Length: 254
Image (cartoon, rainbow, N blue to C red; front, side):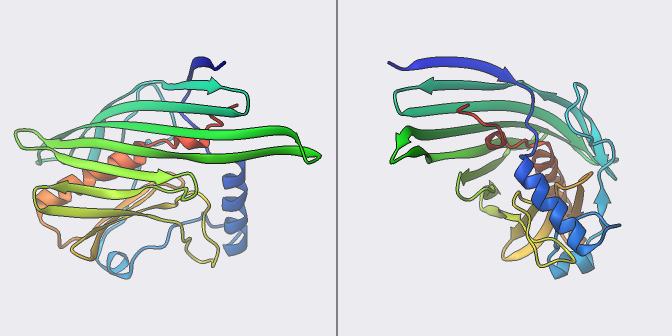
């Protein structure tokens, strides 16, 4: 017989293994330098780094900026986890929603609503050939969102990952404009990569147009050559990625 259970959880924290690997990468590059993600050459040359101010993890009144953009009126639900336990199998689903606004002085307001969902199924057999066997059969995570400049049609943000991939990838699109989003694991000043994504690269028509670093305080780069309307939606997407919390970092089936 299955035994469903539901619980609420605080927003997630990085896995200890991820922290250990990040610390090792940091020590290998320099004892005095923070780990940083690698930027595409065109962004390193043609984009200004906008460091996040006020992004210090979970707060009931979240708000931060990466000047000149401001991220305002952030509202986040608790993470809800539903689990089922069977004879050999255990599975769980987790979900969280958040919404926010972005605004650049003199520019339009953008409203955003996002939802994160995660699921995992494990099989665990005790005393299997003299030991215990536990295998993750499947699972994954999605980040879906609508980003809308007030008075205009919304852009769709859709990213997904499997348990084995350990990073989100997907698209941001409206009409015939499609921006690809890929996780960046490579760290600067070291050959080591980060187990968790160090950030994301956003690409339009084959060229990187923005980058979002989710390590440390967070930072955003937007290519100075993009059109104003693209610049605004890139900033809104960057805020969505900076506010995203990895639900698979929770031990959902414990």
